Image (cartoon, rainbow, N blue to C red; front, side, top):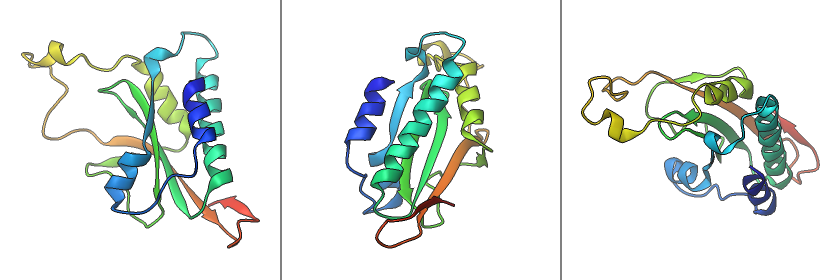
Amino acid sequence: MNRLLQLVENMPFPSMEGELNDIAHANMQSVAISEFPKEEELRGAILAMLERIKDAYKTKATCNYLFYCWFDDLAGELRFSLVPDVGVIPFAGPVVVADGLEEIVDLALIDRTGYVLEEYQESEDAPFDDELPPLKVFFEKYRNTEIDGAKLEWA
């Protein structure tokens, strides 16, 4: 968790040039929930980390962008990325918009390990099918309200 936070705080603002899906993939970061110790304050620690990451991006922003976060239950990872705010999201399947980061973190804490693919290769209970359930995603738009960046606001 500290490594990821240091990485985000020390890197320049990510590039927003190119195709939307390429930008989303290039800017994606993730943290395995299984890496976190089990403790009563885990939820708060993860939320605090995500808020610090959002703050780090805000201080370096060079354009309007969309921050988004979701839990990849197959990988057991909490993921987040940035894309330019162009009115399109980089998901091909159905998406349900989360009311807050808390919903995403709560999903992550339910299943901290992800799926073990070998267990499902020969099983009828495999979690893979043609119609996947909607993915719950938290979105937050950032709009720089002054060209020089003197005033920063979240929409």
